[in-house]
Image 1 (cartoon, rainbow, N blue to C red):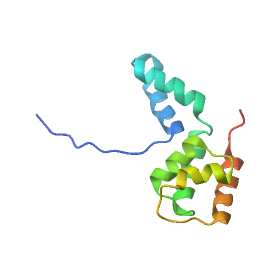
Image 2: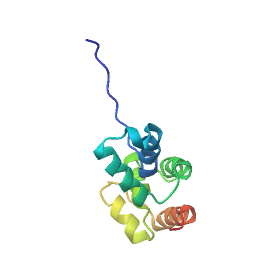
Image 3: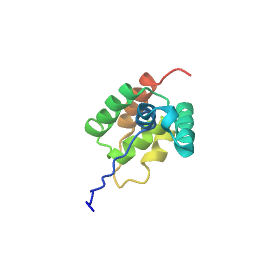
Image 4: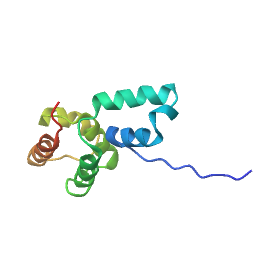
Length: 112
């Protein structure tokens, strides 16, 4: 029996939605259908937008990929909400940078 190496990758909700939709709803099991329903309800940006935002948050703002994914999944609307996601880190991010992140998120939010 051949061994396969498993890899792990953090995904945002829109990326999960894209993966599940690529499988086809008729081919999904019950848990995958529930997950698709969840990501349809809670995805706040399109997959194309989220991939660009993820790259910007990591490269331009210096967030860890884990932090960036969580921020994009929840899309905080204020600096105080954003601080909740970044409080566990050991680095201090200046308020001006946090305001720029919130402005970036608010500028790319999908209207509901």
